[in-house]
Length: 391
Image 1 (cartoon, rainbow, N blue to C red):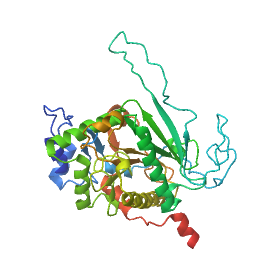
Image 2: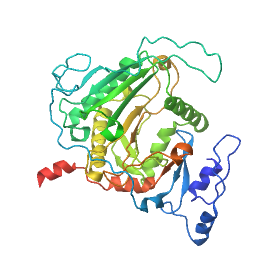
Image 3: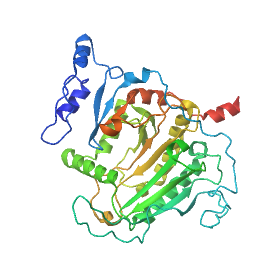
Image 4: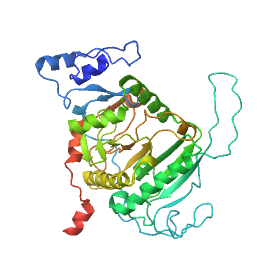
């Protein structure tokens, strides 16, 4: 463990500079922190500090006392509650006509189709050679697909049944296998809610397969490879074991999976979904692990919705070992995981903005991961809409 990280775990008493290995300098302790230490024990919920993210090799500033400040900023509109179950004008509905003139089948489960406005295409020409190293470009090819989770527009994953969620997981694994046979990276992701840029309330996700490893994949490949080389165990397998024992950031768990607010979380109620055994890719899961994955996803997403009694917005995505040519390489350093990044901070109408200091310096959060985990953990696992129906 680096000296600067040890200092954070001791409560920020001695924040040291960068060493020869390039760990970012975090500066000497400010006078206010020295005074706080003289006056009493460091409390993460009261005193600012930085935490190291070993998966991204960067730092996040934790300033939990800032959540007490009054809010006079932007208030978001809650998501609509009156989404029609079926709308012939909605291009994701069964039987509807999409922008390209294609008519959807009357599907009854999951439905996958090529994105009508793809960010990646398989036959794009290569850019011209650069005449200067500061102006480089490289080929980018791929395919983009859309997957509808369910034929009804008024459902979301936490309101779907376990067999319906399991069908989504099966479709994810099939796409990861199919596209991963030739493409190095297959990114499965869901943007839920208009706040996250989702233009259609129908339950769906996207799957983009690319001819290159994206930035986040390259970063996680490097950090996980380095951790295995130095410690002899995959980073996120070791991390899951540690969090399962510590409990303070645990949200939900079962025999095969656990969900935590990671120690280094950036977004207020960010979570990390981890398998308990070493699994490199989504398509490597057993049938029983897919069943328990459906269960823990449902439990987590119900808690998210119950937090502010609203259909909780987020961006989520799966990360696993690269595919395509990497299928023949040693990828033991990888551990399958899913990231959930929700923006809401104080209520259904107040969100966290990544601006100013976050854009120009480093990420910063306004409550500790432990506080966020405790709040999520304490929430009921019966959806607030179903509780209302029972009353």
